[in-house]
Length: 327
Ligand SMILES: Nc1ncnc2c1ncn2[C@@H]1O[C@H](COP(=O)(O)OP(=O)(O)OP(=O)(O)O)[C@@H](O)[C@H]1O
Ligand SMILES: N[C@@H](CCO)C(=O)O
Image (cartoon, rainbow, N blue to C red; front, side, top):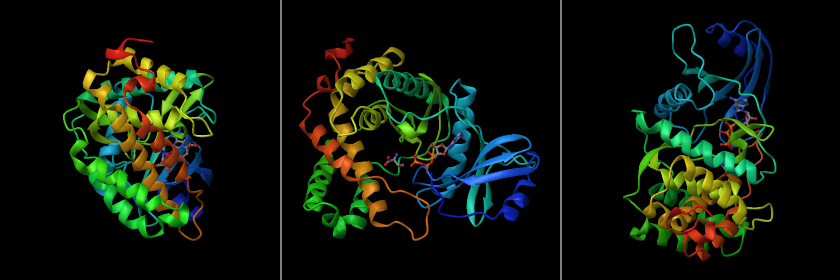
């Protein structure tokens, strides 16, 4: 998260009068993250996170995110719970933004993910996919293939300022991914769609919870797997770590086995996931709002990752044995 919209102390104290959360003791903006404005609140009832939803979040989608967290928590996934105000509603408005308070989750996100973290994420992702199976509200993925072209159009004219040749590289990849190759017949369900290391908390080596459902949607389950390969299985120098990928995929497969079609589609899905994050990062890199407390993420990291996936010929390169045999 970040802070794009500031909240004054008296405004926040007034806002909290709508809840049974006691008295506001202290609060501070959270600089981490890039999407929404977030505050850590300490009240006489405990610690909470206040989110003001910003640019990429459509207000109509908020009931989906809030209901999903409740559903997942009821189905054994450790994630924050929306806090309802006295009128029974969790979704409100503050400083002109849609806003919600969620419960605080203990733990730390891993700054340097290791193989054991990757295995933990694989298991948790598969459990989340199973837990989401009977969630009835639907939300299409606004950042799938048809959502990438507008991002490209918004950044194209300045892309070469970030890296010479980037515009042509992105255009060629987008043309490929939108030429009819993108899978349409893989198993679908609720996906997190942003399960990066800063959205997974650990207590020691044990995964303690998952946060940040603001990109969650219905899409191919294997696309979520591909997002995690990008987010968890590369080193700081952006080289691919097949040991981490194998640990992640095997742990996922022990809970929910990937089908042969899902395995075969992984290289393509990983390319799609890489361009999705490359494009949102590029747009954000070129458009930092003046005065915002935010550190934009490096888009070029995803150029390297995308080039790697372009060189992959089968899921074996990600450490999977043929037909899902555990390595
Ligand atoms: N429920 C929670 N419990 C404890 N800490 C939280 C919780 N929600 C958010 N945080 C803190 O706020 C930070 C940013 O949160 P979050 O990832 O939801 O923001 P974001 O703007 O959507 O970020 P991004 O999409 O870039 O990951 C987290 O890394 C964590 O430190
Ligand atoms: N997790 C994303 C930011 C939120 O979409 C990234 O690292 O680019």
